[in-house]
Image (cartoon, rainbow, N blue to C red; front, side, top):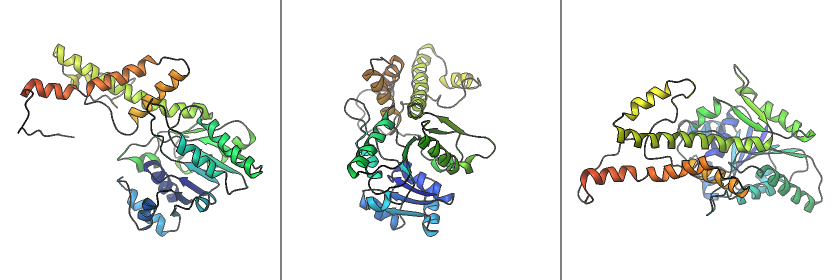
Length: 327
């Protein structure tokens, strides 16, 4: 298949390289000319085990190309993957300007059926906004051709992204029930066919459910982290060993051991903004999502636990002391 990836950040580059490895012809588009130049020169702007080899192999085979030319990039693919950033606004909501700009670019040069596939983490209802943005450009061009909008959120872990993409627990795809949506569904089924090894790992649903699934997954994992951190503070007070408690509850198959480690709180580029954005969505709709607010509050408090322990042990004057960080 001919595929365009809009955005060569973490998600876009991994997606492009892995899809090219399956034999697809992929063009990765980014307006950052320095990043594109680096990729064309054989460099990699992010560190991810195995990604450099995939990029080099598929560039050499002619299946993976990089460009900053918008018209050239979007003219290539029947499947147009949007993998751009959605940074948080001051109020915690997701900034969709880059997603909608990509949508408008998709509609510019092609006059045949195409599918806009959203991989960016976006609020529920963004698929409708993407569809409206594409329609607006088509009307300005006085062109009427068929297209579909699909939600296909990513679930990649840093340090294991290539493995996660090529051996997924599940692939979430949201399509509508229109004729164009059914046509898009078949294209997506064909694209991800090689991943259907011993079982069907595709979770088919509507677009809004797929958008919510991504936020819900990250919020659930963040909730586990905050719960364990709160439990760890209780364990300190009552004289219990939180590691023993973790092993005891993680051995329950209904709970499992993942994301049960107490620490300094969750961070990174996803959990904080996704928890905030999901809570903000509820607020805009008149729903107070109390658990999410508590998850965020516990995480903020946890950032002070380690410094407070250090001050309690060594006093407030730490000048000249050396501390080792493990992990």
